[in-house]
Length: 334
Ligand code: ATP
Ligand code: MG
Ligand code: FE
Image (cartoon, rainbow, N blue to C red; front, side):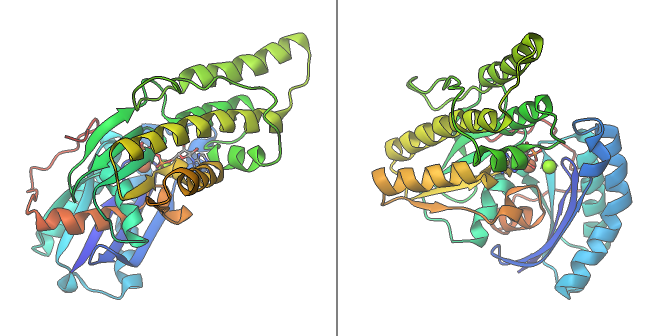
């Protein structure tokens, strides 16, 4: 079964062709990052315009690279939330038009479920599994007992992990998005600032990153006021050490309490080297029976292949959409 998948929830226009939920025939990703950089974040109106310009080209290119025609396809999948409403509507409109023109079923996909399914390209899921979803807008622990079933057992009370990375990057004068750069810097410094580990000892699976973010920002501003130099590499190392320790500790605890077979990491921050090393080591030492699935770096960020993988299972449930499908900017798991 071949699915054409469309993703336009934020600042990447992406179209992919995916076979049987685990093989990528094409995965075109048109990034708009340079257009948003001078604003230090994604500007919704700019994002929508870029999606309109890119979407048709991406669809054509995805079919060409996959060497398939519409007649070979069995469905069209599209992200309908969460995300920016104007951005989502561009992908939804394109997917509807394609589905109507070629008489193909339309499969609505939750962007966050899509992030989890990026791991399906590495290894088949074994249930029950735990997913650590860490992205620009979300930080959640999601328990899955079967395909299509999502129970959020913990989440951030304030900022997402990726958001904290980007705000810390801004105060260090790094271009947006700065997660990757901070990750690189973190491997060259030392944890000399000792920032707090929020909610580490609390008996739940929730997170909080805004206090840490403020600590870093205050450290930089105080140094500036006193005319002192900061140590940017140590700052990156110290910040990342705090993020990673909290994420790893709470994720391992959740895996143990829920007796899962697999741990999946997902979302843009799942590309983080410190996090990957921390989880690998932690599982090896404490729960070697749990297998860790780490999607390749380019499938951690937004892309349509992950939407196509998720859609393969969703389409078997026959939960399909019609031409009334609308964007749901605040879509949550239920
Ligand atoms: P959401 O998926 O919650 O709607 P989003 O789609 O904007 O949000 P993603 O594209 O999944 O988020 O991830 C982008 C985020 O990942 C950015 O905040 C970026 O800084 C962060 N990121 C990317 N690489 C790394 C890395 N190596 N270390 C830490 N953060 C990273
Ligand atoms: Mg993005
Ligand atoms: Fe995302």
